[in-house]
Image (cartoon, rainbow, N blue to C red; front, side):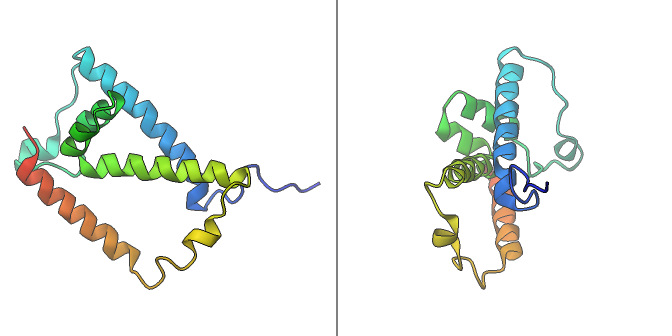
Length: 139
């Protein structure tokens, strides 16, 4: 008997969001532990050799601040990491609602981004994030 997989199509991004969000939560708790107990970490090699922050510089501090529920500090250290956690969490919540029949994503999201080049949007967000890190991230 052929039954559909429990999570549906594994290549559909909405089916991967709960796993991504769970990973972010595990990393946030780990980051908090590392910073609270002063565990030595590997320095950013990109910043060490080039003098500029990489795209994930501040990510550990951002996730640790998120684990402490300090949202302002989390956004300040790394807006990209904060919003990745926020959107994966929101998507996971909507995914669970959809699985229980309380929400229909096709009604809300069909055609909302049609015609918008998603790769260009991601590139612009990443560039803006990096410029922010270069000017505002503490050393």
